Image (cartoon, rainbow, N blue to C red; front, side, top):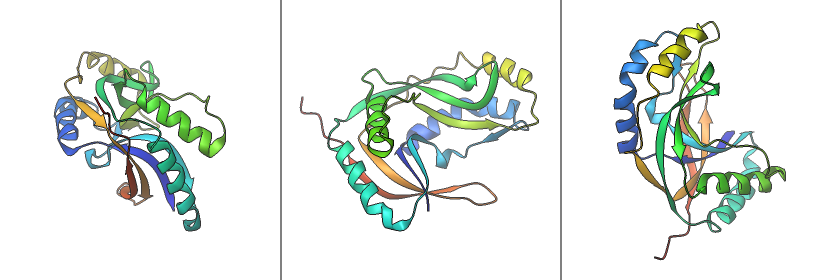
Amino acid sequence: MRLFIAVNIPALIKEGIHSKITDLQEEIRGDIRWVRKENWHITLKFLGEIEEKEIGKIKEIISSVATNNRQQSIKFSRIAAFPALEKPRVIYVGIDDKNDILQKLYKELEEQFSGNPSSSYTAHLTIGRVKDKADRGKISTILKEYRQLDFSAFEMKIDKISLMLSILKREGPIYKELYSINLMENRD
């Protein structure tokens, strides 16, 4: 089973972000494999191929991390790319996480799974991947034109984390939530 741990994004936010990037998608359609909005999520930890007998232990770890963290809000920010806007391979919408909840969840999961909480993490929403034979210079120029797009109106509460199954198909992956658990509620 191919598994990952993620924060799923509400359908209304997916719709809103998607409506803002439609022109970008049209402009560089042939050079990018766009992620279907139904599959948008914030990855916290990619686990890879896992035997079914390991799922119980994974759920325990996720539960431990979730019950150790309080719900917090994040906002989406701007279009960006890995490894850099000048040499794009992955196109994403950045995340403004003023309380560092995603960073904290990531570090705790890393520590539980690999014992290495110090590896780097940039919270993001992947929206596309650049094809191997694409003109990266052209794509970079177009992406820079879209840097002014502001996604800060899209705010969401990080209230749960999910164990996700990834089923690879020719037409693209299908994701299914296997398990989720709420983070602690804030008592203001």
